[in-house]
Structures are given as structure tokens and as C-alpha cells.
Image (cartoon, rainbow, N blue to C red; front, side):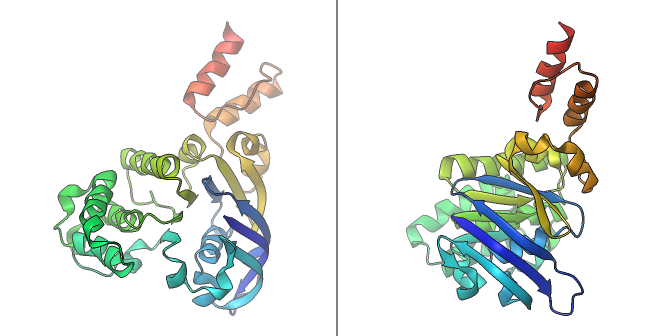
Length: 279
């Protein structure tokens, strides 16, 4: 699905490489969470996947990014958009219409979705993000969180093969954040859409993602299934990533030789861990 080989990139005028010799394969149907401290290279990595780099952000580019076997250097973002749908961190900059309905219709019409499918795709996208009541609203009157849901709706209506999102819950409250991640899991499991999401809320990633990539200084320092990556929690913390409290608790119990089982990635698994040492 996505194969990144020896990818290095330095922005034009930049002093240091934003990405340094990245090698990673994202298999079809994966749900990959990307995490790291500010400046680790997360957004730059997404820009390389959707073709914004090197077509819109120029600089020193080495290596390759291939999506379905096609090199992104040979395909501009607009050519990739039918395959790779993107929700950027500055999501408002990708909006082109003033009304919610028109924003979603714009993509559907420009990608030649059959006319008899458009209404269903539009209403399904609004329902999935919980904003059907905003269909006729002027986007300028919406809150930041509502605008973010509009941006996500416009992309998922297109049903791309790959969906890349840069901090999609940044403007959302905890309940709405979980709603978005439940939607991403549904798109992943029921529709087979490959999900790549940059997110700072690591508990959400641990609960919903299948795999994690931890970035530091433009490099991927850890990558693999969530539970396997969390075994290196101290390395994650040294890279500026706050691990879930359940992982920190497991580390302390292991330091005291009280627990030697698998690392819990959520509250139910943590409860099971605690019960195993108290019964």
C-alpha cells in the first residue's frame, strides 16, 4: 500500500533535515498512529505521503514514497487525492465553500462521483460525524470543532483508499474526540480504508490504532504493534512522548517484580493487571 524508502527531506532554506532516512511500510488496511514531540517531523511525514512534499513544499528530497506502487514524485497532490484523502492540521485552509453542504459537494462533484450516489454519500458523511443538523449552516458561523468535523466529512465522503489526518481532534472535546476515533475505526474495519493519523492524545491512539510510529528528530525511532511499542516506554518518554498512565503503572510494578505480564494499553487491561497481583 505505502512504502517509504530512505526518505530524507530538508525544507528550502532550512538548516537541518526535517526527515532523516525514513523507512516504513504501511500495509493495506492498517491503522497507524504517529506520535512525537513538537518538531519531530510528523506533519512533514504526512506531507510526503499525500504529495504536498515535494510538489508544494520544496527542498532537498531523497528516497521515495510509493502509494499503490506509484511514486508521489510523479503524481501531484490533486492526482493522489482520489487515493489519499487528507485532513490537515490547518484544516480551515483546505475549505473552499461558505456553506457546509457545498463544501462536501465540491469534492464529490469534482471527483465525478455518480450523481445518484452523491446525496447518500453527503448525508452518510454528515451522520457519521454527527453534524447533519449543520448541513445548511454558513461555515463562518461554526465553532472550531464543528469546522473540523466539516473538513473530516468532506474527505470521508470521497471514500479514499488511504486517509491521513494531522491532529484531527485538536479542536475537539473528549467526547467528540472519541466520536472521531470511533468513526476512523469504522472506516478502517468496515470499509478497509487505511488510516494514518498524527495525534497527541496517546490514550486514543493506544485504544484505537493497530500500530504506532514514534518520531524524534526527524527519525522513526520505534514502530510496530501498539503493545510492542509500549514496551519501550522509557525510550518514548526520553523522546518527549508522555506514555499512558497504565503503562507507567505497569513499568513500576515490573521494577518491583510484582508483575511480569503484557503491557496494558487501556483501562480494562490495566484492571486485569492489578487484579492479577492482588488476588
